[in-house]
Image 1 (cartoon, chains in turn green, brown):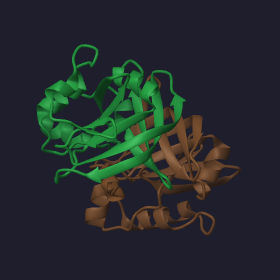
Image 2 (tube, one colour):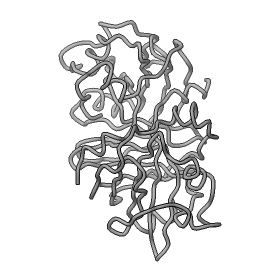
Image 3 (cartoon, helix red, strand yellow):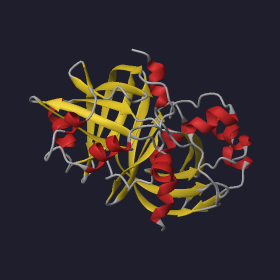
Image 4 (cartoon, helix red, strand yellow):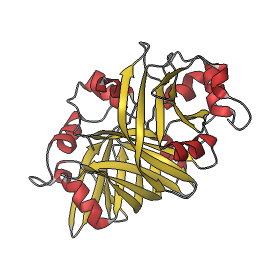
Length: 160
Length: 160
């Protein structure tokens, strides 16, 4: 078994945001996909250690911002490699509120989801959310996780 | 709400295979991702109407073959747009058996999974499987779903 074979799976690069009890936070994620069309629903995997995962569990809602290839590397640094326990990540970027959730207007698109079900996967929660709103934002090509590694030359994102 | 915004999410292109009761089948899927590292685990969404979904539920196991950009379009036709209820898809392609599951050696990589948990999402099942084996196959660039639409100019895959 060569686990590097799993590097051949493809992903996008996203900022998953949430807000609960007057706090907001977000983190980079690549483990995110649409599963259903009727109703439209997304699944996202998040590490239980992350503040985003903790807040999302409380809020029962999350936002997704789809990063483009021209995303500011500083944005990736803030959301991928800082902890919301140490800083207010959204204080460092241009963001907007949609229906109480934070999104990043410089991204390609956004979606808002209400959590309907969740699976406890030990180290991670897998949340399934119904899309309550989504729209295009700035034009551009969505960033793939392969592009992130090849061009941005970023470190591996913390899984979920 | 503009649901075409969800087209900006990124995916790979896979054949998910399974075998139960002496029958084998497989289908194209793009809603597949790694969620956990410890143990390595994949989540895949499949439409309940598909024979693959039905057999996978019986088998409790599945294989994933990661399609490359140079995948034979006939393979996509067979696995994406035929039903295993009408034909034996694997009779039409070069395949191999690994630990009782069918894989496609002309793909970039494969993984075998044992289902550990599942979510009933109405039209779809979302299966979470622990990876029991995986390895690289033929060298090549994994196909993204965007590449499939742009270059192969294929019709949308049936969701899951």
